[in-house]
Length: 432
Image (tube, rainbow, N blue to C red; front, side, top):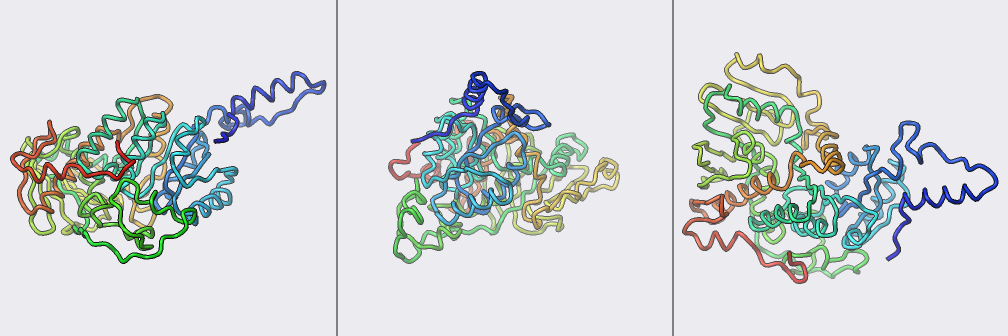
């Protein structure tokens, strides 16, 4: 595979040529990091794996970082590949982006430092682990793994290879959610009793869509799209986003779509990072968990105050706080209003209210940590524990019974069926 000449090699070559030339060489200051720009030799290089709607959403924010350089995009659908190349050239002036159908071609490149993984759920953990093995740092969209065992494998792999990993649960980086979690942890609500997480209405399906003719591999690589998931016949609805809620492709009951964010925040508020509830049960569309501390986790799709999507609510013996993607915050009693010294609604709901987020903070945290080698906000251990909580609670709904869980061993007590569902069979050759 032909690789691009490294920036450092380019500068060395130019300098040598200039020394041999009779006339002095005049080079633009930006090459050396003058004029306030980051020198190309000091930029963090990026490859993108998966470039659908969420991938473009993330990449738009990444390309605003002056010290990041996009080199390659891998995508199994040709129309998405080609659109992305034209888009980054037109809107961001990024030229010479190499396109690949197979993401492994990105991992083979020694000139790529980091990868953004924004495929469908089925690929996130596998691609992250392969990237870590190839020496790349990883920003992965959520859910970062679609089974309990895969969550644990992901965290272990990031540690084994010294990988900087940031999960895309960006609400940990948002001011209103941080304020709510800090207030819950401060004791100003009194002893914490319940933490509430907004979730989607639960849904799962096991059927196959009708078979359709498989497109040419260079148009849509169906085998690569399926990846580690069980084989099934091609249908264009899958590749257009209709894979959601199909058990083979989804993390289970669509619970991670919002739960990956909101349950994560509840874990933080309950001082439960690195752990999980010890008991789970379901009542209709509501899921429940009970932490060893006695704090109750409530996961519900309705009954909120209308403060935006991905709402959370923390209730103590002396007060409560609720917030969501709008950035607005509600508290009780009124005496807690004195704690609200900032208007968080100024950045809430920046993309239509569906992903109210600071467009910089979470992404910036990742690239800063790539440089310092410190752990980012949503590192793999944080993601692992909050995702396991989502998986275990979803299994209580799928199996329609109470489950007792040991978070130290990731084991369901006296329930062989639940323990078998902690993992899935991956299609060869996609083993991790």
